[in-house]
Image 1 (cartoon, helix red, strand yellow):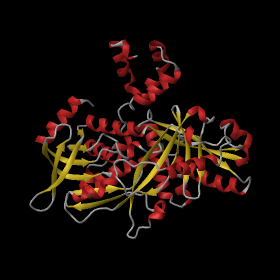
Image 2 (cartoon, one colour; image 1 turned 45 degrees about the vertical axis):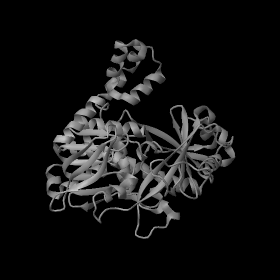
Image 3 (tube, helix red, strand yellow; image 1 turned 60 degrees about the vertical axis):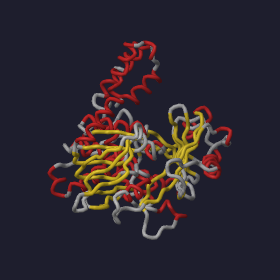
Image 4 (spheres, helix red, strand yellow; image 1 turned 90 degrees about the horizontal axis):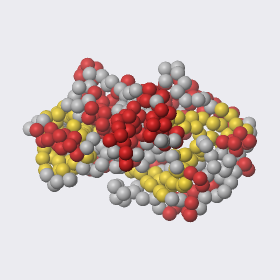
Length: 463
């Protein structure tokens, strides 16, 4: 996407009437735009910021089933997420989503190992079932203290008797969103960021008929006409609903999660680490040249656009990580922090001190006729959320006639990725890139990498 594409989309938005207008350019909104466009619906998507500027670029970078939800006996949620993980790994975005090993440290040699092994075993079984009885990631492996230290030399040997190695997956979250938007555009959607909705329009019957918007790049105000409007604005759900003037909709709790970032050389380890804490869980995640450690879960009532980690947040994360590290981390080791807001569905009576108990399952509801809101869920299950939102907007009969196809639809860069990856050594030799650089480029651009490399052919200074 480029300025020319944005200009074309804006022109179409001024003049056409769309089947679907999606408000919100995070992973859910982008997924909805792709789902609608790939069903043959004329689709427009706008966001007041850049794509993935909110929660979708501030996650733990994980595509996971939610192992802790298994211990809460939420089998349906875990099974659904693991099924989506398999689709992302194999079909939808294999260049962006990669298997990631984690170690679960064990403190007791018998009871805890048996208890944990049963849980991880169920996790593995649900993953295989969800993938159509195919193994998309390795299954659990039990490690002694020595085996754990071989994989994670900087773990404190006194903090464990061994570990269970299990697999989930990691993803460049913002890149996933951009790929969703680009794929939606390839299937006919019109997309423009930096476009703010100022009012949801209704016809004489009170049905949503589009929106008044302003182009934040130029200040131009215009109207987008649409037969269906979908609100996928995450923690801004209620503010967007207010633009419709109705009384229906969802209530969400903004729950803040923070991460600290450390240089990769600060901790010696080739695997991630999964830690259960008194409040929730903590991940120590290898991410490119860094470690990302988090997260927290606290209610947030301040400015939604710029959540920030507090001193207490940072201390909490470091304290939890230090429980298993031989060389304790300090503030001086931290090279960065970031915070994101989860849009959690609110119960009728909200106890803010227990935000981790609020449902992470998603809900779709009607705000006014012709306008729906969707909230909750998590990055891993964005595709299911998108499908449900479009089904809801269409109604049962039309949704059955035009079902979702995104479970089998590769994103840009995914189709032909394996063949491009097989050419990696030859491409690296041609352009003078080592294996690490080629792996990075392939995981970023996928099968589009040859197109990127032609830019170097045209201008060698780019390489």
